Each structure stands twice: as C-alpha cells, then as structure tokens.
Image (cartoon, rainbow, N blue to C red; front, side):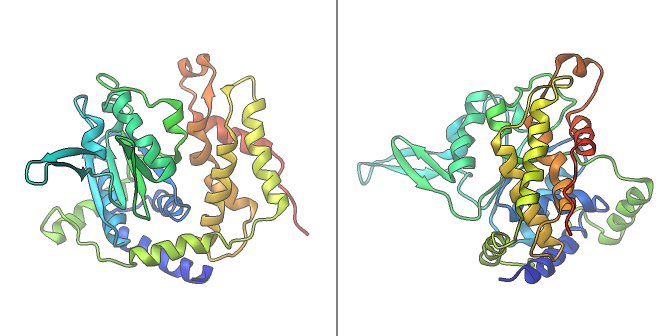
Length: 317
C-alpha cells in the first residue's frame, strides 16, 4: 500500500468516526495516527466526554475485534489474560483466553485496578504476547490498548506507574465540546431516535496492517531526527521545571508518530510541523515535573509546549 492510499483510507475512517464524535477532529486524528504507528493510547479526561465511544467507533470503522474490560479494585490479572481450567473429560488443563486476546482492548478506568492487575498488561503492550504458567501465547495483530482514566476521581484509584505510562505512545485529553458542537450532538441524537450510532466498516484488519507497514516507508531526514533528539534532550535539561526527562522511548515515539502523521497528511516524508503536532501527547506523560509545579497547577502539556517554542526548528533549502 502506498502513502497516498493511507491518506485516503485514513480520511474515510475519520469521516466515519466523526458521525459518532462531533468536533474533536484533532483528537480523532491523533488517535488514528497512534493506531497507524502501532501504539497504545491513554485517554485521560473528565467523565462523559465520549472516551469509550471513541474507542468503539474506531474499532468498528477499522473492522477489528473489540473487547472491553471495566477495571475495578477486585479485578484479577486472570480476568484480563485468561486462566487454565481443568477438563474432567480429558483430565488435562485447558487455557481459556481472556479479553486481552483481541485487536482493540478498551481498558476502562484503568487506574481503578491495583498495580498487580495493571502490570498484567505490561508484557502484552510491549511484547504483543502473554506468558501464563511458563507458556507464551502470541497476540493477534493488530493489537492496540486504549485505556481511559478520570483525573478528578482520585479516591479509590491507583496511579499508573511510570513504567506503564511509558508503554502508552500518547496521552490525550478530550476536553469539553464547544457550544455549537454540543448543540449538534443533541440534534443528531434527535435525528437518530436512539443512543447508538451505526458505524460502518471502512477498512479490514488486513488493510490496517498494510497501512501500518506503509508508514514504515515514510522518509525522515537526519535533520528532522536531530530535531526530535533536541526536543527530548530539552526535557532532560530543563532543571527549572522537570525532575526527570523523557527516555529514548520518547524519541522513538516522536519518530513513529511523526511518520504516521505525515502519511495521514498524504506525504511520504516528515517535516518539522509533523513532529510539533505529536510532541505534546507523545512526551507529556513521560516527564516528571518538579513538585512545586503541581502546587501551582502547571501541567506537563504546558511545559512541553513551552519547550517546543525554545528548540530551534531545522531549516531546509
């Protein structure tokens, strides 16, 4: 598949998902960008902002299998991965696969489960495989985890450890709709006469894999790679605001996302604007701010945005 086809099919997918999600075009484009970059997504925002609907809509438009797990304090790792059950007829243990064996897994309110259960996803997210009782099971491709968490509901939650946050390629915040968009949401609900939105399949799982492979052909120059490294390095050198900067995984995330973003734009090469477009969602959750900034309500996104203004942009002749 060529980059131009990725652009056209990506546009079809976004148009179809937009039938369910009014406005938020930037967020939807970043979600599809992350999927094309074969990465996982953390949606962090207030309740009722269609985070779950976004995950379902993309799964339907992409024609992939979708499963949802509601994370709760009593959720066990086996509830996600699966469990071995003794078969009395064969007198042998049989492995019953859990919901992680799917294409798109929605981990709803992931920070409500204890760390032991959260960590059950680490191998699946990084290695695309699950090891249970010494036996390894490969996950089918594509495999994308879309996790949600509500920042305001701190009571009864378990903060995601940095190691797991780092597994998410992006962290996105949805935000409230504008007045006009909210009016459009109400009008569409009246026209549908039901809550559910019918989303048609635009691509197949095989075509999605081809789109992901096409992203690997997008050219990125050494100058743009240096720009990526300079941005990540800036997070490590900002001693005034940042306690711990982004790791090399942050650089890899920027590279992968910028190539996918360029492909959605219909280009087979990356420009600095592509890097800028994905830098905040790619890096904000990978840095730890100085403690005093939390008291001042300075966000990680704001700090990364300020760094982008300071890092020189490469010029091309």
